[in-house]
Amino acid sequence: TRRAFAFDMVFDVGSTQEEVYEGCVSSLLDGCLQGYNATILAYGQTGSGKTHSMGTGQVWVAEASENEGITPKVIRNSFDFLEKHRDEVDFQASCCYIEIYNEEIRDLLQPGAQKGQIAVRERSDGVIQLVGIHAETCNSAA
Image (cartoon, rainbow, N blue to C red; front, top):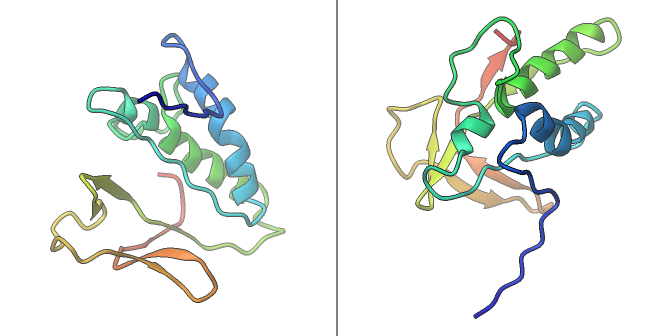
């Protein structure tokens, strides 16, 4: 059967990390910093470039690079914004880091945790949340 898929954005194989970030993520981060929620999801078959695009296979470095992926760039830009506005805004930042693989949710901040401890729940107000994941308080991008 033929299926039609809608895409917000498509990038050529030669696209840079910066082009992907500016095209897909920058406006989402702006919204988050104004109080809205956003999710960035990398989906695809094994070997399709999810880890590269998200930048989760890289070692953290103090300075940004042209190969920096989405995750470290979001973290860096978030804390740059918070630092710039620290006299205007009282903030507390925390981070959760999960992987969904074969319909199983893993908490990457608690790698030794028992399987099956994380559940997807919908609150009475319609908000979807993950129950059982660890949130780590963050004070800087480092």
